[in-house]
Image (cartoon, rainbow, N blue to C red; front, side):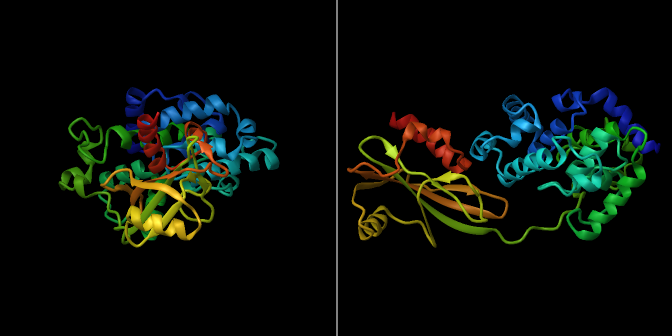
Length: 347
């Protein structure tokens, strides 16, 4: 055991948060927590974890669940491919491994949607495999303590930090150690305003000695953000029905539901939409703009500039959905937030 790992473990024993997935070594529950907490803070992810466990207490229940229900429970977390991959993996574990999670890193990493970090976490926490986890928290702790300025999202940096994590980990207490270093990064060595004066590693932290805490870890800048213009058509007939379409293809929000969409190089005015619909032999009685100012929805690599246009129809919509039933469909946050506000004013 290195002094570094011993210090981290001692800190963890006194400061760890009591979280439900820390009370178990059940690989299903550990895996579920890791999937939910990817790109999600614990405070936000905990209610989702509890909700999923309540609906699907074991992997057999998740495997036989309807995808639409899984996506609806996931609604609000974003990155919906995580939920779809999770559902596929549950089916794989049930069909191929009779519901028993594989125990080796090499088997786990072959599962759909499972990368190095998640495979390492499951293998070490559940089965004691000597594999270090390297997530954003771990990158930050290692980069600051050892003063490393290699970009953590570059191929050279990824290899370097993985090897360094191997060197400093505690093999004998690998399950606790991996959780300890992640927890240390989450609440002690935070991205902003870390508690350096109260840090048990401060005497040997190179970033602190060199006044480089705010500079580390280093991350390569992302590419250019794509700007897209969405014009959602919120159909409403005289019975209070609307229309939702399922998104197909490989783009964002696959298998989620949204209103009929016109994507354009700019936002459209109600008069333009009215003209295009009448040309399609549709006869709206009126089209009004829900709000003048567009909704700007920011994703990791694209910004969606969005308008919702209320399209009132005299005749009953074919395949219409009662507006109050739209909550039964998994929708992107952009759409669900509109629905919450709109329905409150409509009913």
